[in-house]
Length: 403
Image 1 (cartoon, rainbow, N blue to C red):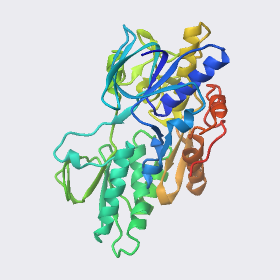
Image 2 (image 1 turned 30 degrees about the horizontal axis):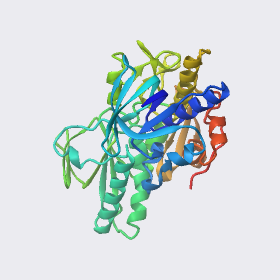
Image 3 (image 1 turned 45 degrees about the vertical axis):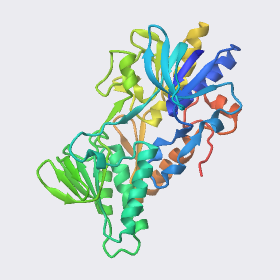
Image 4 (image 1 turned 90 degrees about the vertical axis):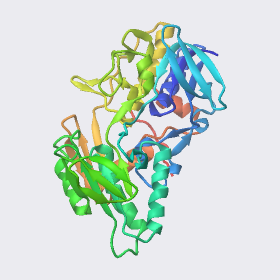
C-alpha cells in the first residue's frame, strides 16, 4: 500500500492530525491520499477514564470521518523504517503488510509504566478503556460482597488525585447501605501531593483529600501486592483487595525506531514544525512528541496539547509536500483543571499554576472541557474540517456535547 501521508494512532493527536491534513489538502486544492492507521475503531476519551461507565467513553472513528476522503486501516504498526519510508503493519485479521509513505505523522501516544514487583498482575489502572472497564467491574464485584472495601491508589499526580477523589463518590454509590464506608488510601513516593502540579493548587487539593476522608501516605511506595494485601517499602501492610496504579508513563515504543533524540519518558525531540530530529519526513504529535510549548516549557502528555499538536502536524505534513510555509507550533496558554470528585475541582492558569477557580465553579469548567470541548464533531465532515484549522484552539471551537 502507498499513501502520501500516513497517520499512525487513533487517539486525539492522530484524529486531529488526519483531520488537519484533510483540511489543508482541500484548502490547497491538492489531491493527496491520507491514511489513518489504528488498531481501534473508536477514539477513546482518555481524560475521562477515571469516571464510571468507561465503556461509554469512545467515539467511533467512522462517525468522526464519515463523509471525508480519509482512508482508514485497522492495524497495528509493528515497525517504522524512516530511511525507506516504510511501515510494517499487522491488520486486525492477522495479515502482515507494508505501507509506503511520503510523510509520516507518529501519534501513537503513551502508556502507563507499570512496575515489575510481585503481584503486579493484580494492579488496576485507568490508562486504557480495557483497564478502566476491568476496574469498574472489579469495584462492583467487591461491593456485592457486602464488605467495607479499601482501595489503594498509587501515585498522587494528576491522574492519581482524580481517581482517588472520584472513587470516594463512586464507592459511596456502590455501597449506599453500608454501615462502614469504603476507604481510599493515596500513596505517593514524593514528600508532597501533586509533585508535578506545583505549589499553587496544592492547599486546595490537600484540603479536598482531607474533607473526603482520603488517607494520604507520603514518602512511601508499594513493593508487593497480594490478592488481599498491599505491602509498602517501609514494611507496612495494608489490607486491601483493590490497587490502582497511576505512577509514571512511557511514550510509545515506536519512538525508538524514529529517532535517538528522545526525552526521559521516551518522547521524540522535535523542531518548531514538529519534525523529528534527523528525519524531517517524520512528524510527531501527542504524547510521543517532546515539543516546546512556551520558552522553557515542554508540552505535557495531555489532551490539552495532543489536540493542537495534531492540528499543526497535519497541516505541516501537507505544507511540506506542496512546498508552502510550515507553521511553527504555538498552543494556547497552558491551564490545568484537576477534578476533585465530590469536592469539586481546582482550575489554574500558567505554568506557575495560579488558582483561578475552585469548587463547583471549577467543576463546571472541568465538565464542559471533558464532556464537550475535547469531543470532535460527529457525522459532520464540514464542521470537523472547519475546526481542524490549527488556528482554532479547543477553547474556541464549537463543541458536540457528549451524552
